[in-house]
Image (cartoon, rainbow, N blue to C red; front, top):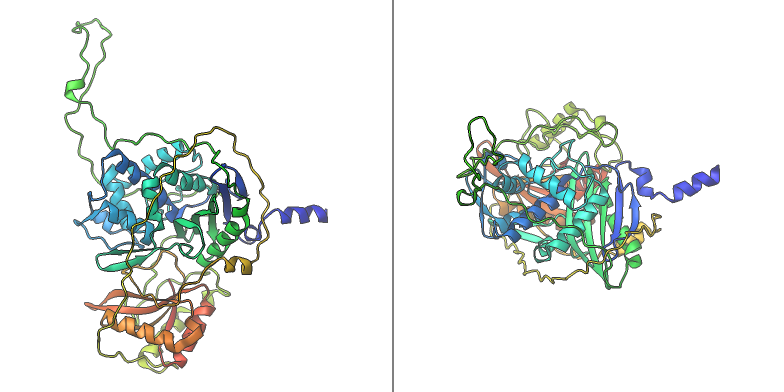
Length: 540
């Protein structure tokens, strides 16, 4: 009995044993064989992996000639109001298709996703129907889409295997556009947005493709890796944190890429249905005529044909509200909560909801009452706490480097359509330590990168705020100085600024992001206070 339990436990990855949301799969893209799987056919929430299918449909429209990269897409009030992450698009403005594509690839912009859906299909609901039909045509039998962005909807579900199929299909069918997924940074209207996929440029051979996160889904990632003549597509779903998800992906790449074929492609091509027209209507010059005039009381068998001279106007309607989930098949996402303070370094009239258990936290925030948090905030403002608020220096010019994006070369590869059965080589995990996996990542972060955005990053976590300044340059300068003075406590943490409206004035929050646990954020805050910086930690 003991031996049997031991054998079962050895066949299940430690990640799966520790996390019920976990699912993963590795596919050899050349042979179609499954090299690794864990809960690969169990239902999961796709979160922003949804946007891979949204982009697949956009690429269909580009290939069909109904859109061009310079086509202008109109922003509706509904699209503008989508929750973060977003580009901050305004009602009535337009955005080019190319900018919308890059906004989805890098920022994972929800507002741009809705703009795409409404301009192609008239509404999110109709676009989601097309997404689901396309999924079925690709063989994604267990995937249903309800929106184009992946925001919580209990009816929107998929599997790791289906996401791997989509990851293979989009590069197989649209090699001329797949290169966008390599984009590491994107500049739009004066702001630079970094790609949420942290493995790009850090793990050799990774060329995309997409991350995703909601509280219900956990941290998701689809990766494509080409190295030494081998090509795999791997999926990790349900990670507890962004860093643990990335570490698991690196372990899968290190363990299973060497098992992939270096020979010619033998996998059958993924079926591709012809691009769908946005609207079909009969033309007056092609309407068939009856063979004879119908007689009263007698049928001639001639068909009755109705023709439209123009399509009926399509009204844009909000997506339908979520409905209860699928029982025990997948967890039901929690209600969306307010995650931001109304103003920085001002005593809020009401504090934001406290998450019952933050990802990776060693203890819960329920141990701290709202009254205690409010009292602590008052002390920080009044200067009675241990850390005095840092004085804001007059604005001065600060040189900020701009990231230039070179064109991405794309090689079009003609795949051999060789029929053959897909075989499972092994579902047993390869033992790779976290230390070994970490060596696969080339850490090139030796400079301070300041991310400027009007919304939070897609991958939430603990953040430390040190100030709210009147200008963005002040915030940037303060972050650079704080990073230099705090030393190792902020090593690997990203400086981040964002504007916030407070009392009719725009302030710029100065924050450090990327803390996996509350204790790590508090430790950094303690070091900052010793360096004479006031600060507080917040989960966002």
